[in-house]
Image (cartoon, rainbow, N blue to C red; front, side):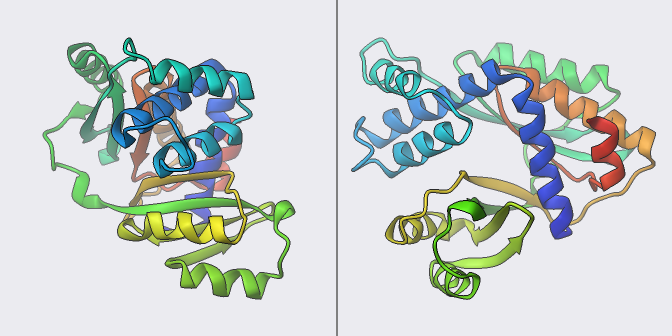
Length: 250
């Protein structure tokens, strides 16, 4: 997938979420809850997953008191229990779609995801039907305005931390790592005293498909339908996102 398209994809997804800030906060709270449940404690100093979840929450401007309330609730006996479930399928024109959900009611989520696929003229597939079309990567977004070192020094240290690709954009650096080096890069950034705007494991498509604008808009509207669902955490697809598509969706 072309570097520009990876960034365009992320920009669109973040932009779409900005219009639905309440749902964006809900997803961040789920990430905090799961990090505490799976990490075994509510202390970000000793729970790297929680530390990362808090950083991501700050990246979407979640208020500090909201973050603290989420941590307190997730630490209690009545904390919600979320299960990770994934769905694979195809949208119109053969675009592969991979949906990651965190849910406390799998039956509800299955019904909702299947309905979204069907109403859009797509189809829900079986596990493994599209997963092979994506590669799991660590993706870190670094705010250029907050970096206190020159580009060459930054890149050298990032490469030592496991970076396989570094993209420079107008306001940010996009740093990619292998799936297995996600934790290593987190440690590297902590030592460099750099707090990323966002850090997460993503599924990057190995190849993308460019469609005529009207067909591409149909796919983007389908992606938005998935992202409007409270159970959906992330949506990945093989559509090539061009400037024309981005401009048409704004």
